[in-house]
Image (cartoon, rainbow, N blue to C red; front, side):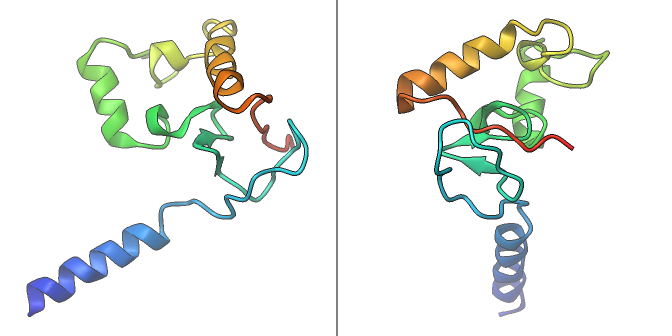
Length: 110
């Protein structure tokens, strides 16, 4: 019983504490979204698909590191290091546009 309660509690904490807030789609293409973390599977903050975001998901980051795809200088996947090569972002934007027919949502700049 204690183990079940522990697992259930852990599940609730993970579900609530994942950092994802409102995931409603933006009203306009490319609209700034201050409250959302991801929309349509897109990590707004890091401008890559959520499923491969090495900055949001430690397991994904470990996989990139194991495969030798890691920028030690900026502590992120090399293929996602837009600081080293800003043109890498275009690959992810093109994937989103091909899937959804619009530009990906962007984060509000402070």
